[in-house]
Length: 267
Length: 265
Image 1 (cartoon, rainbow over the protein chains, first blue to last red):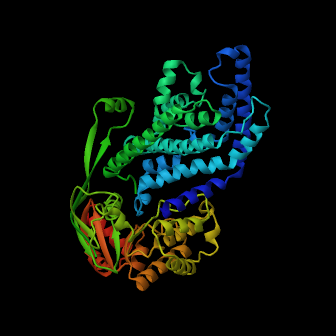
Image 2 (spheres, rainbow over the protein chains, first blue to last red):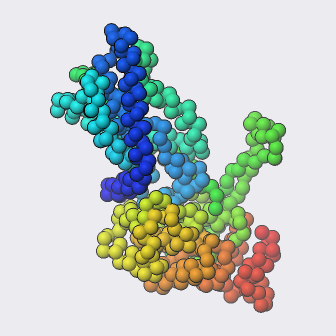
């Protein structure tokens, strides 16, 4: 376990190395969040009755989404990992007495956390300053907050296991950029990255909520705002557990198979 | 003890002629060629020996190293390092192994070298006392004290290579594979690296397999040479024997070139 922790620490340190990137990300997220709020406000003013979410829940969704964007953003990949498979540099990692899946999982998780931890607090603080109902309402009951934390942790597991699934496929595809370019927009739509899932048409929304993408940001962000409650929370968290377990097992199996037939190219 | 008996490995490579029309043709029917990388490779290396593993490009050197490192499984044949079959007991096997691939880096690009060292310490579970001792010794011998605090991306090639070698030895491996460790190094760094490899072998009895195209490396380090070509072992002997075979007054480099020609490889 210790080696995964140090690996994690390492990635965290590498992430903290770049201050300008964090600052740039921070301002982008704040401005983006503000623009989204303006957009939804315009929609709301036009048809207040047809809004599928409470205004406060939506505001919480948007500000938290911007604050923790890097935790679940599916357009951020570690090119290095895919490159290392493509060029054969993965050979070095295979000469270590470690499990490649575990290492890369720890690495992906650390990348997301290291990028997110720096910028989350300022975005949350700024979001809380925006006047009600469009600001981030921070008062939630301890029980809801606890569920929010649990489903956030599960969200990270789902996101990382999905990412690992794609990395594992690189052993067969040699290049995963195609998979990503096709997959990222779909994942973003089905995950509630473009609009929160309640804004999707009923059928699509149902499918999205059951898909692995619906087990990502969708769950904790809606729990926090109070958009889903009670039995719905239990169901959503159950789906998160299911998807994380399923994708970890599949990814692990694919990577095992990939390593068996691995053929490390070049000198 | 490293033992390889009757190892065969064949790669399947896709080939086509140049040009667009052939590229289109290859969409529908592909031609594969079987490239035998190793044919009936057999040798034994006792503990504590420094062996030069040489041969022209594409001879099968890297394939051998990859099989010995447990990264690649051969099509047939037996191989044992210590008492382990590398690709079967990969994790156990590699914890006793140090590897330096001259053309790739194992250091983390963005963070100071010392952070990479500490990560490796945890990965290999090196006890703190032994880690300290090894790091101090490596730092002194390879003159790393200034380099350790520098991010790997800011190091020159020679500086980085010295760090790579130190990184491969932190866990006191019994066997060390060096794949072109002096590639691109200046004269001073080369001498330093060679001196260090000898020292490591003398003090710790580390078995070293060195693949290189630099015959001065071989002259300076190796008591024994394995010469391979087209996947076969062609010669197994000392540098003196190889020079004797090639005729008089030739340097090792010229002798080897002469042998390549003679074997038609």
